[in-house]
Image (cartoon, rainbow, N blue to C red; front, side):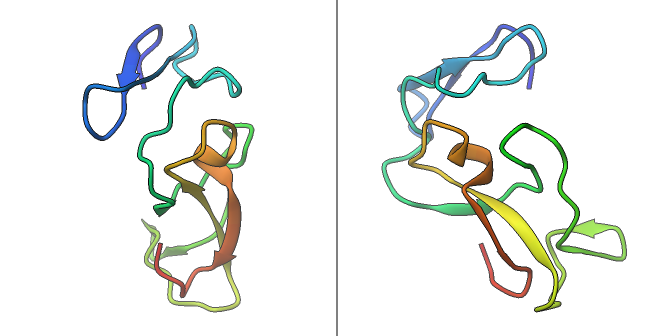
Length: 95
């Protein structure tokens, strides 16, 4: 993401927040969620914007069918750190 840019939700009208100088959302500052639904998506990120190992296969992210490997996911209706890292689950579980 770009620094100091206003981002919007899926509907492209609802403002969710402005990134800081580093191009990230400081959590607790999102004014709205991306979507009203609890849509889950793989992010590969921790709640502190660090990359998280897991769910990789031959260098291609999020396509690992290994039930023993875990990967992080975010949830679209979250406005805090759950936006990028709500939890983690087995990589053979679609998100």
